[in-house]
Length: 390
Image (cartoon, rainbow, N blue to C red):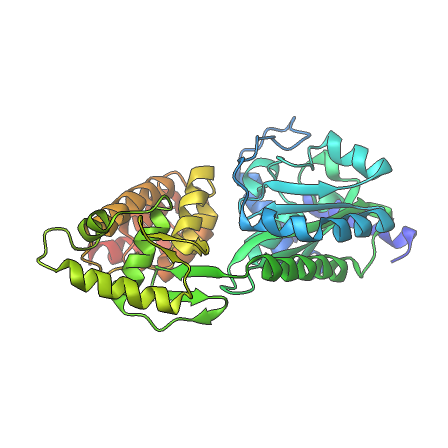
């Protein structure tokens, strides 16, 4: 588009905003994802006077995404400088963990808190490419006054999700932003290229890495390859992941078996097999994991700590180790489910809750919250009442 076409697009967007009834008929001009984002933003009760994203202090403990950025930040800074854009990387909660910019775009970014610690989720700042890409798990771009906050109507933003190279779990998003009249149709491809750079860095810094999946179908990956393990061995690794300081043989036995009459020799044999499989990355005295450990349940716990309910619900794709008899793991599961239920009853996004219910049909708390949120006349409301009754 040339400048006159971009100006016309801005006028067209403004007309759509002032005539909501025309949105459905003209969804092809805006895109379904933008319209839905506008609707969510309107329901979010965002202060009209908000002109910058809320700022928080980041955790001192670096996430895998932040570790990976240390491997590729020079390359990303070069891209931001050469393109005269601000480049930001955010976690799954839409909080920016790293950014780079120069000149005008640096000043623009600082004014609206598009910097490290800025919280750019839809519920706080409304429609933006960073949050939209996380929401849809697809590349996206938001042009000028498609943004909710007036302070970024001067921007055009391109975003792409960042996936873990092993688990394929979404870890965050990369966003490239510039002034609206510098819009380029290749902007999304540039964002996807940046995401690929970060994913390569993740692969580089995650050597000797253990990934544990404990929701739905339990599974353990070591350096990207699935380990053939017994359910008991998966439980042992899960306990050690939750106790990074390590456990004595007696403590591990108690956590795993409780009062069941299982000999210490049985546990020692399990540990010996695990040590062979992990190539010596299982320490003893105390027993502890010496590899880099990531797990869906640890990511879910971290998301709940940050108040990122949407991210936590995506991770909790089933029951945590549904068949475990370990007293330690059963207690931890009860605690997690209690925290998750509390977050569900505070959630306001029906689409997020419906997706969670599709993955976890037994989630009665999600059903009850949806009944509270859905209008009585809505067909889904009646179906939920029938579903709850059964």
